[in-house]
Length: 566
Image (cartoon, rainbow, N blue to C red; front, side, top):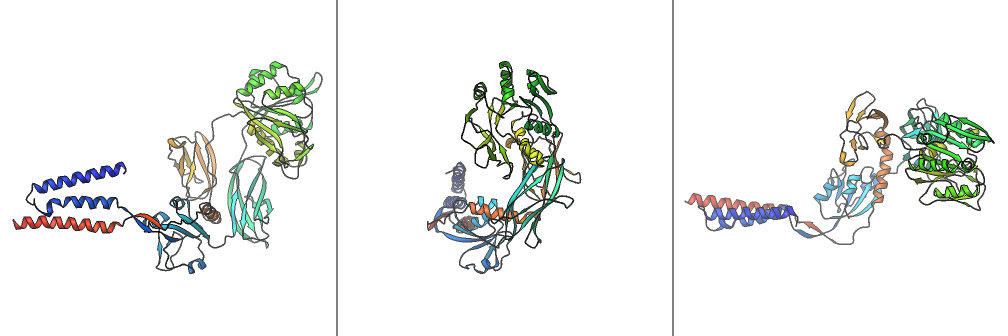
């Protein structure tokens, strides 16, 4: 028994003993009145903690939103049926309940459940316990089932949106910007999936409308969404190259166009160098540098003291990108092996299709394989080979880069994909600066709980009308706060002098998405029906209450009768 049960038992025993003692020393000291407190206490104990009895297991049917008329017509009247919110009871045999937990409390003998319709929401899934669960979806869904997109992207990059549809043959997706112009288009494949690629242009709160069209170009489903396009953090980059090449030229141009600060030194011939903001490799220079990009020729030309300064700077947080554009000397291989990268010759093709940069683009590479413990792939090819790999070193990160001609993306007119490719590299490797940003939920819907974490005690939410709402921060749960937005559109999180935009989806705009998510979550919890024919359930309390009331009334009547006779 629990501590509460022991405490209750002791209190009831003491109360019964005191009652018996007072009755014995009172005017009604004989007969039934003396012993009445004992059965009263015992019945009260059973009423509070009824004993478990073997009960026959029953199967129940649960009707959820989206149940079809055919499923309602085929219900078995001999089986208990419960209707969750969103379902209209078509006859008196269907019991309407606010949630599954209520149905289980009313009928503890329920052992297995058969759910019809769109499935169970999360709070009902948590009430299932170890009961068997069967699920039969209701009406067929038609429209957008799943849509995934980033909440925040960087200006000048390419971002993707993908998802799944159902019930639309020969459909296509169209993404419209705020002006109504088509930002991207894609066809739905045979499996109902789609993928859109969108160029993020200038920093803004970008509003989009995603439309699903059928074969006749009629709109089947539509979703209004928002994406925050940010300028991105400025990075102090240092580029060292042992010779002028197109890769260095276009990388330098992209760094400047992205708003980052660039210092560079490119060797043109013996004694002749092209310099930009170069102050030499000193401790102060490297402490101010977020990312150093260096090729194998520039590395080979460095004295040992400069290499040691670079290693020390990486230990303190600077990022380092080692570009391979030609044959490596034995000394360079040894230096980079000391940094954790073993460069091995390999029987590989001299080109590879970029997995991260589009299936139609090939890059040239040297037939080398990079082996590094505890490393992570930074860029992969469609043949499963790794074109760039990084690993942590002290507080910083080091990567080895094999592609030779990513610049052809820029010259081929695909500057957004080029910016996306190098933006990922720089954001992964560059020194971390500033304070961690708050963790924002994605997506956010009207009247649904959203958790915002990593915020300060004075954080506020501001809506489009300028009205502000203070958030209640739970410091014991990662400085998180729960937020229930009341209207769709753009909101701002005001925290520590910063403003971050959050887009809230309209409640009705995501009906299909929520229904599809609920069905999938229910499928994930399917459990085979239990073969056990009995179920241990608490004894019904009403007979115990009547017995307790009978004994209490008899005791009261007996004592009144004794007093009246005197």
